[in-house]
Length: 266
Image 1 (cartoon, rainbow, N blue to C red):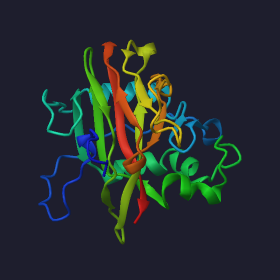
Image 2 (cartoon, one colour; image 1 turned 180 degrees about the horizontal axis):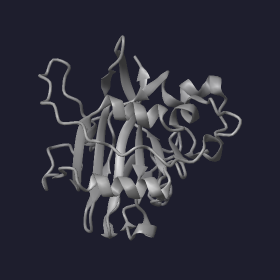
Image 3 (spheres, one colour; image 1 turned 45 degrees about the vertical axis):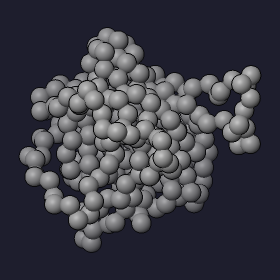
Image 4 (cartoon, rainbow, N blue to C red; image 1 turned 120 degrees about the vertical axis):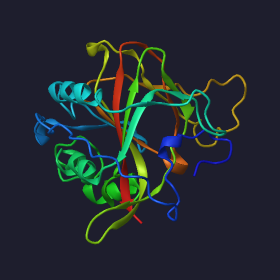
């Protein structure tokens, strides 16, 4: 959980284990994940070592176009204008569903699993040996959070500065896997090329170790601005080590995002 005073992303919260299950929603008839680039053409890029990783062209522009068309048919709900105490201000339209099958498709039906686990170590672009990846991801990665979230940000919508929580989840299987989330996964389906202006994801690094109490004359570290790119996957560490971040206001067009989380065994 984030320390006291941190504004959190309420969407990352999970109901307590003893809470009654949510009413089942019909599973969307997700479009097939095709076409995709070959694994050999995909690479991971550490934007900030140990905290932010991107995968350009994780989805092709054609697949993104197919999905934005499909997602617009889902029953999206607009977030409340006034957040709960301690939650960040978020203004967008969203759809959320527990769909282990689709989470597994995103994980194993794409190059994500092999990239994260280091099975493509020689070509994946990450300067971390396969046997050291568990330290990066926070444990043995076993898949994606079955809780799938769809976000649409229209003109004037945004997500204020916040931290993403880590949560305990169960990944169905035989037997089920008890896991916890460690990294947020964001998949961008639109960009300036589709008419979406603004909506960048911006991270605010903490001062370097030993400089927590910087003088007023010292400038804070420069923010890290991640521009929207069609089909780009963004992974960033969350939980206790989450970096303060925000989704800037969309100035024109629509920003579409698919959200899940990396899960490690607990």
